Length: 209
Image 1 (spheres, helix red, strand yellow):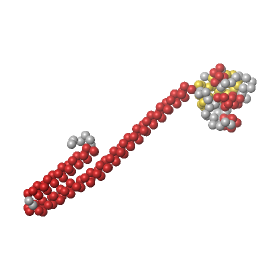
Image 2 (cartoon, one colour):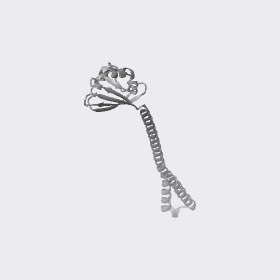
Image 3 (cartoon, rainbow, N blue to C red):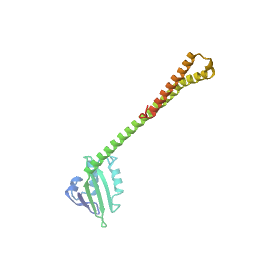
Image 4 (cartoon, rainbow, N blue to C red):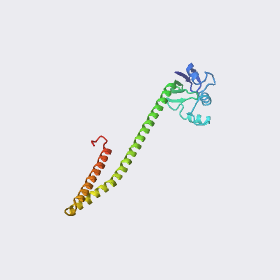
């Protein structure tokens, strides 16, 4: 952990080695909070700074600096490091700033988020694939039912016509014609039974034939 102490005029009065190394600075009379921020903007700060205009950035930073007794934030650097910075403001105006290297934590968070995103994407793809298969199956069933409904009409019409002939003219028809009409009825019934079996197998593949 890095530790730096600033006086009420924002001069760095004392800092340990980690603090100096992390922020690439030194304890010197001209080392102020603003000079450190300018150096960070020029040499260290990465994507969190969304403008190359340092004055505009400093204006934004000053809006929160020394405005509360305790403030904590995270900052990323172009060399890949992440620091958690905690500012503690005393009643006498002295500011204690601590820095903690959280690079490994951020790296793990990034890897975890990437793994989550990949898992979500895979799940989404699986769901879309299943929905597509379901839609294709539904369309196949719909097409089959439409086709089968047409298939039913022919044997049903033959059965009805043969039955009507036997009913109204059976006593006047020769035996050969009666046998032909009876066979037509049997063939039609067999065809309709087969169509019904196909429908049942489509609804429930495990159903007995």
